[in-house]
Image 1 (tube, rainbow, N blue to C red):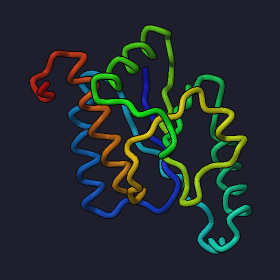
Image 2 (cartoon, rainbow, N blue to C red; image 1 turned 45 degrees about the vertical axis):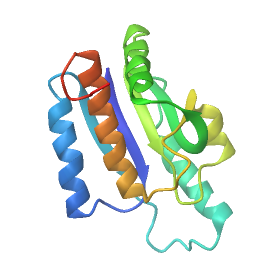
Image 3 (spheres, rainbow, N blue to C red; image 1 turned 180 degrees about the horizontal axis):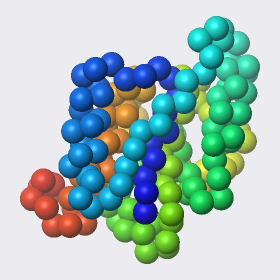
Amino acid sequence: MHIEIWSLGKENDSFIEEGVNYYFKKTQPWNSIELVVLQPPKKMATTDVARTKQVEEEMILKRLTTNHYLVLLDERGKHLNSVQWSQQMQQFMNQGVKTLVILIGGAFGVSEEVKSRARQTWSLSGLVFPHQLVRLIVAEQVYRSFSILNNSPYHHV
């Protein structure tokens, strides 16, 4: 299974990029993973929430294929602990999921159409985080999931 973390917004700041790459490198022996940053046009006015979500929807749906299993991250989603993340990863692999897409939506969330395409919706926390930090958190949780599945000493229970 290949994992893609999709995130709307700007490219990572260098300290985030370094952290994401750190966890991706640690995950690579067990699973392939990459970050896809979807950048809306810079001239887009963020005051028009409906238009922003529409443009972001078009970007997401243009890229989404039938081989993708879409998991949306949303503060109102299902709360999973790290062991449950690892169990989900194992379940996806058992089901033969070719590409798992973990979507970090835009600043205003995602459209109803994108929500309807998601097979699952997860929450990282009741807190709201900056998108770049969420990329790093997700990269770490994916690594943690595979370390749990492979009995690595990284995760302590």
